[in-house]
Image 1 (tube, rainbow, N blue to C red):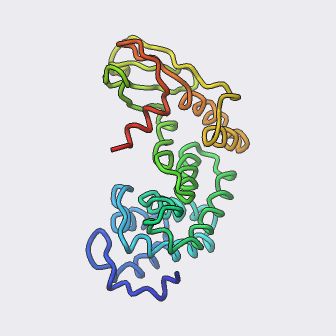
Image 2 (cartoon, rainbow, N blue to C red):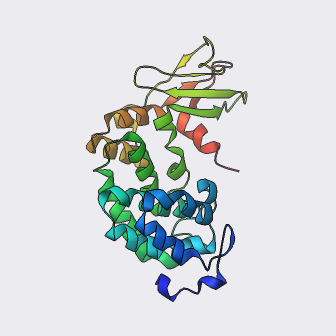
Image 3 (cartoon, one colour):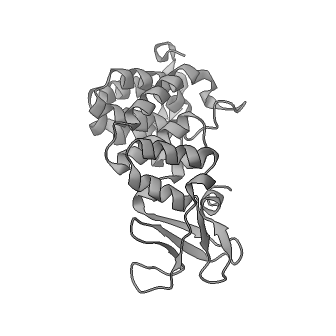
Length: 248
């Protein structure tokens, strides 16, 4: 679908009529980093809500990303990725992305290329999530950022107590009290062995390792490993509890 054929007056964004969106996209093309926050306020507020105009903007975002410099391209891909993450995948019958398979393919290709060039962990994780959003991978297109912050909050599957899961380079553990404020009882995490990683977890680990993101690959083994509740002693999968937090 060509965005130049779009009747923007019939669409809405977060602020109402989307008639202004083509002009906003023009300004975004000229200054991606400077206009990114404003664009998201209109097309994907809080990075978790999209509108008809948001999806209609994907063809133009693919064009902008294609023509952008490497430094500016990440901003465009992250904007498009946030929008895509708000929709079921292309294979779903009710997916708003179904009409935009061509620009999604372009955005996926560019994100795949940018990943290997990203040096900073934050940028890498954000781009990796964008890549997954273009593939329609739900939950993990929004849940990997805990690897860069080094912390997840989950509930014990048995006693329902809130648990901090801390994934660090030197120490990885879980606890039920605020470890930043006081000494706490810690239960060590058990990382998944590389040969135990299957499917998406194996793919993410392999990709991060190949791209020189050793610290992230290390963290992925703990994310897809196991933990023990410090309160009741229940053994659980960290990834399953992280995913459970996203399921209504």
